[in-house]
Picture 1: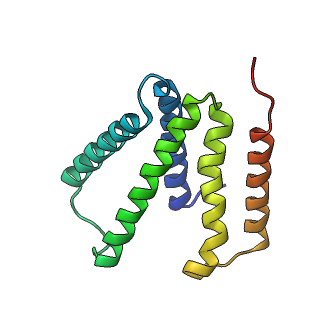
Picture 2: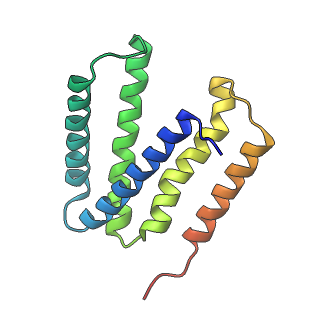
Length: 146
């Protein structure tokens, strides 16, 4: 089985997000939610700045629309990270909070993308969204650890 380059990049993102959730869980309860989110965002910004310096060439032209959508996305991430810190601080396990936050976001985007971007919503995608939502329900209703 040969993976497409986009899927290899997605798997790399998966590893990064897994490490992100692990580090976020380790930090939660040891730093305020907003300060934790700010430091996370500052570290992300510093990392991206390094990437821009190291690899300044881009295959895509920058447009005003692209900038506006990127900023909106960043504001949404800020809210998501802050609520994730809160969820973990309040005792939410990584398995369910991460699945709900990231998986739920992906499921919502998958449902909205046919309307917003004209993407095809196939039976395969519907099944994937259903499985993801099922996983969120299973993990969110798991009895608390004692």
